[in-house]
Length: 448
Image 1 (cartoon, rainbow, N blue to C red):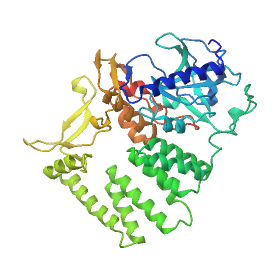
Image 2 (tube, one colour; image 1 turned 90 degrees about the horizontal axis):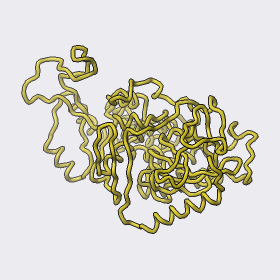
Image 3 (cartoon, rainbow, N blue to C red; image 1 turned 120 degrees about the horizontal axis):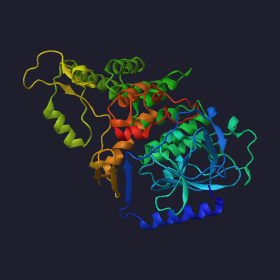
Image 4 (cartoon, rainbow, N blue to C red; image 1 turned 135 degrees about the vertical axis):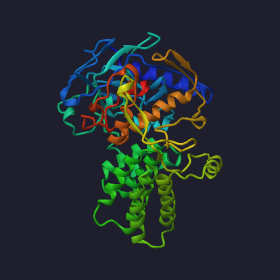
C-alpha cells in the first residue's frame, strides 16, 4: 500500500469529522449493498503471520495474515466507522469498519468508548482496497469479529517497537471504578452497548466489582442479549460471601432474563429463591404471577388478544405473551425436493391457533433516524430506501455476536439462498481474545 504519514491520516479524518459536525441534525445519506463481495476470517491469530502496511497490496485480501496497528484518531461515523491507524513502522491507513455492534447510530462519546485512541488492535486477514470515490486507499472490515483488541502483556506485543514511541494503554489508564462511571453515564443516556463495553472494562480492571457486573447484565438485557446477561449474573451468584441484597438483585435479574427468553421454569426458580431471602419482596411475587400466566398461555394456547392489543397500543412496547406451538412441527420435506417445512401433527380445524412466536429481531418506525438509507440487494435486484432494513440486519448481527450457541444455530440454519450450507464452524470463535462469542459471517446474515 502507498505510504501515508500518521499526520496525513489525522488531518484527513479531522476533515471528515468536521464535515459531519457541520451538518448537525440535517438528514444524511447512507448506502449499502447486500450480496456484494465480502470477507470474514475464521482463523485464530496464532495461525496467522504478521504483515505490515508496507507489505500489503491494494485490492487484495491478505489470507493467512494479520495487521497489528494502533488507533491514532477518534472514530468518525460516515460510511461505516472510520478511524486512522498506524503500524509499528509508523505507516498509516484509514480503516473502514462495518456492522460493528452499537456503532450504527453511535454518537461521538459512544465511539470514544468503543474505539479509544491509542488502543492496539489486530485485524485478521485484512482486505485492502480503494474507496468508492477512488480518492484514497483504505482497509475495509466487514465483520466485527475480525477486529481484536490487544491488551498490554499479550505475547503478540513481545518485541514490538513503535517507531512513533510508546503510549499508555487507554484501557489501563482508568481504574475499575472510573470505567464503571463511564458505563453509568452511557446507561443513563440509553447508550446500552457502549455502557456494556465500559462495564466490561471495569470488570477486567476489578473482577470483584459486583455493581459493574449487575449493571452490565441490565445493559445487555436492554439490548435483548439475555443469554449474555445471564452469563454475567451467574458469575455474580458464584461469588463467595455475597451480601444478601446483592444476591437478591442478581436472582431477580436472572428471573427477568429467563422470563424474556420464555424459560418460565427457571424464572420461577429464580423468583422463589428471592423470596427465600425476603418473603416480602413484592417484585418477586408479581413476577411469579406473570410467569404462571405465561405458562398457561404456553400450555393451552389461551390468549386474551384484546388485552394484548390494548397493552401494546398503550405502552408502545412488545406484548408480554408466551410462545405457543400448536399441532405443527418442522420436518424435512424430501417429497418436495428437499429442504424443511412446517407440517401438521394431526387434523386441524378451521380457526385453530397454530403458532405464536416472537421475532428473532424486528425493526419499526421507532428505529427511524434522521438518515436516509439506500440499500441495493444484489441477491434480489431490489432497491430499498428504508433505514429499518439496515437496522434489522444490525440487530441480527448484535444477537449473533453475543448470543448463545442455540441462538446462532437457529439463525444460521435458516435458508440463505446461494450462500451455501450451514457450518458448525460458525458457532464458536477459535480466537480466544475476541470480544464476541463467535466469528460473524455478515454476508450470510444479510443473505438470510
